[in-house]
Image 1: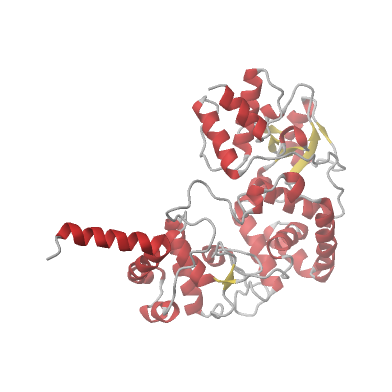
Image 2: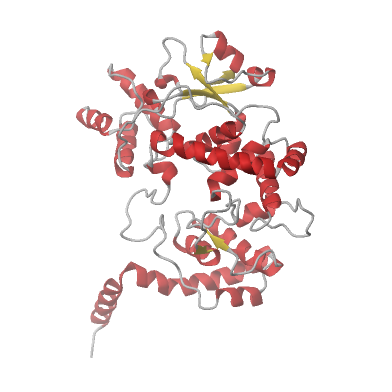
Length: 409
């Protein structure tokens, strides 16, 4: 007779041979049973749930899943967090997008004017988001949204958030908003021309063309209005620029670019900052609070960013994304390229940036999340560390700063 210890050992061996993918697939059935019990909370019937999840399996090939064997922060598939500003904001690509944007501005001029009257968001801004999200509808959206959202709710890094998104996707099918074949998404579960999540569709989707259905898949008018409604709902300020490119006053470095230190644009100008790049600040701009932002540290332009910058960031939480859509909107409106060029600078890998953040935290310069992303607070912490050590201040998350941090242990 086999002893219980032998049986347990055999079970453990089998589980190890199966690997994390097979084990996760086994647990997926239990996960679906949990979600079936929650479906009624958003109005999804058991009939809908059973029909749409029959034969459903998780897609464990998706990036950013919380699976055994996938260690540390992962930004795979997210160019906003792996490219440098010089790479992400390539002038030729932006110019090509702006040319297409001007074509759509002419095509939808009447609708965009009506959208701006209702929501206060310029047509160029709405078009820029559409252009970035799906290349004005030309980009392929290859994934089955139900499968993606179920997988993200099951083993994603933001499981709690995606449980609702998964159920709301089923509700969209039940409500007849879209067919299952038409409900395609990105690997992160974003849907339609607007690349919204299902919760955003229900919160901000607009039937602007009067068809009786909110259609962000085939109605360009509905998609554009839904984007504008999203921005308005997040607090877009009518008549306020998103950012002003500036030449910093003498003595100001990227080590002073603290997003939490804001004052009126007029005060920045009084301190010796100069607006460059062709923009002329309006009275609304001059009165608005703004903070100094240097996204490439010492290797690129400096900006005064306003509330509308952060409204754009609420659409996609990435500074490079905001710079792209904000600048694209300016170009669509006939604005000029940035006056200060982006310089080529090698950025550390995701793991390297995480190591920089860990060292900065250990030495008391950084108190934010260690995520391997070179955001505002990471660059600020690097700059302040460099100032404290008497080093050249560039605020850049490269290998040189990591070596300096490690040498200072």
